[in-house]
Length: 339
Image 1 (tube, rainbow, N blue to C red):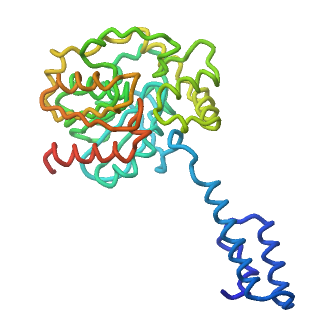
Image 2 (image 1 turned 90 degrees about the vertical axis):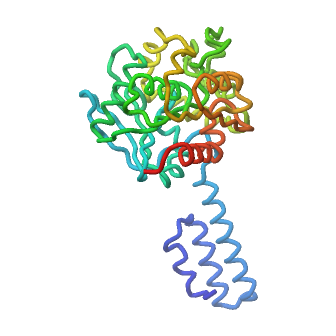
Image 3 (image 1 turned 180 degrees about the vertical axis):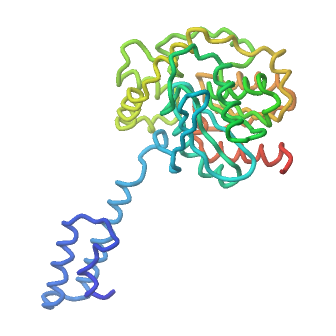
C-alpha cells in the first residue's frame, strides 16, 4: 500500500469526511515517523474496512418485504387510461400481477432472475402508479385490460401469473381469453374450490386486502404478522414504510369496489375448462389460505402442478423468492414447448 495515495482515498469511495480526516492524520504521522509506519498502514486498512462495512450496512436492504424494481418504469395508454408497467428480459412472455392493495414492486425479488430467462412484464390498472378510474372493478374488468395491453404490445400469447388476487386473475384470464393464454401461475389464492368456498373471515383477520377500521400502524403490523411466517421480517421500519406506501397509493376505492361484489370461488366445472399448463405455488405454513386449498385447486385443473415451499406464509414470491423463482423456471421450461 502506498501511503501517498491516502490523500485521495475519498476519490471513488463514498466515505464520511470524518474518516478522511483520520486518514490524513495517519499520513502526517507517517511522514513524521512519529510511530511505526507498519502500524500506521494497519490503522489505515482497519479504518477503511470499518467505513466500508458501515456503508454496506447502510445501503443493503434490511428486509425482504419492502423493495423496489430496478428497471425503469414505462407508461402505455390502455382504453384511455395511463398504465404504468415494468418490462425486462427476452423470450417467452410472462405477465406478473400483484395482489390487490399491492403494486408491481411486489416482484422486486423475482423480476431480475426471471428476466434472465423470459420476457417479464408487470402491470395492472387501478393499482400502484397506474390510473385508478372510478368504476366497479370486476375480474372481467382486469382481464379485458390485460388482453388489450397484450394487443397493444403485440403479444400473441403469454403465461399470466400472480399472487393472491393476482393469482385469481391469472385463472380468470385463462377462462375469459383462452386464445391469449399460454399458461397459468397462481400463488396462495383463496378463489379455488373446496370446503372453503364461503370462508368466514373477519375484517381484523382478513389482512389479505381489507383495510381494518381505523387503519393504523398497529393494524399494518397485525396484518404483516398474520401474513409472514418469519416474524423477524416485521420490523418497525417495515411497518412504517408500508403504512406510508398504502397512504400514497390511494387505491382504497379500487379495493372497496372489488370486494363489494367479490365473485364466488371457482367451481370445479369452471376450472375444468382450463387446458393450458398450470402451476400452483403454496407455502406450507400459510394459515390465511391453507395448503389444503392449494391442493384442492390443483386437483381441479387437468394436469396442474403444485409446488409447495417450506418456511413461508402467505406470499411465497416475497418470503421465499429464490425457491419461488426456481419453481416458475422449472415449470415454464418443462411444461411449455420451446419457441
